[in-house]
Amino acid sequence: MTIKSIALYMFGMIFPLSASAESLYVFIPTEVRANVMQDKIGAFCLDVDVTVFGRAKDFHKQMKISPPNAILSLMPVINYNETYSATLNGSKNGSISEDYVLVSIDKALDLAAITGKRIGAIDLLGRKPMSDFISKLFNTKVKLKRVTKVEDLLALITFGSVDGIFIAESLFEQLRLKSNLNLISTRLNIKLGLASAAISGSTDRKMTECIAAFDTELNTTLGVDKWYML
Image 1 (cartoon, rainbow, N blue to C red):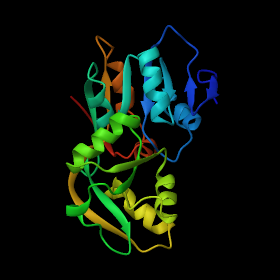
Image 2 (cartoon, helix red, strand yellow):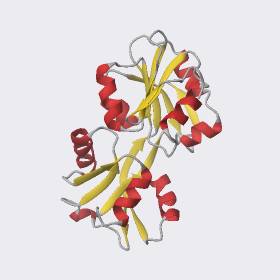
Image 3 (cartoon, one colour):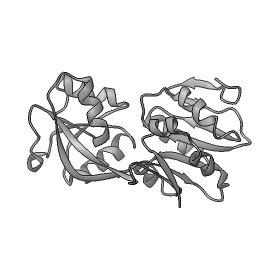
């Protein structure tokens, strides 16, 4: 860990020490530990206090306590924080959004009978906002089971805790390879935005310029391959 990123690690997040530099909060669920991700991002954003969060609960709590100058997250999270304006979109294979699927075991779920079904999803917004968000996407009420990581979704469906899991199509193949189950994906008419950066007020654009300079390895971890300035 670099001198810049020495901080207190607790509750799945890293708290920056400096109060003078501009601040960037990062919340993008990945398999990489928060402290490792913070070091990787901090190496590109040398004059920025970078805080990486591993859980939606911690991210949104700190957003209320001490709002940062900028956030780097998935578009549903950025849209939820309306005081921030997107300045940088991540893209993959030429698209700034990706398809989502509903994954079940052995047979596809009947979308016409999805009301009341137990659906697992990675938590992005917190308990009630996430439940409302998923219900709006499906245009009906479902019983949402929130988890922190992709691997937790696999555990949910393996042990029968849910009827299906809601996940990006790009991650479905990863799940299928990790499991001996006969996982079936059902295409949905749902697309969600990829990782993007947003700023508050008159934050220096150098904040987003450092993100645009991320290398291939870091971009891949964040689920994008290019960045586009808005």
